[in-house]
Amino acid sequence: MAQAQALRLADLRSALSTGEAEQLRVAAQLSIGEVAQACGVDQSTVWRWERGTRKPRGEAALAYADLLESLRQRSSSPDERETA
Image (cartoon, rainbow, N blue to C red; front, side, top):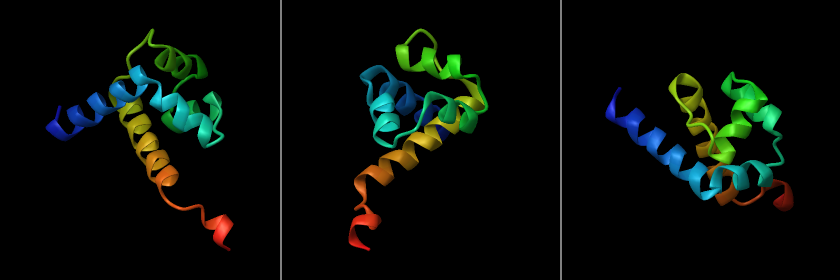
């Protein structure tokens, strides 16, 4: 595994353990099912990730890390709908 991927997984697991991942999902008004579909896993898998009973791995974990990064960026940028 490349170092960059290992760092992304460590960041993802940290976000899950602190509850940040769930907070970002809820703030973005995404359901567990929508996250699951984006990551290519079952809804129960995302639920277990968010509850800490499973650790994300492989391509699905990297997809989830990418999704969380995009949600972070979206939450830190001004809402364009309010300025339009």
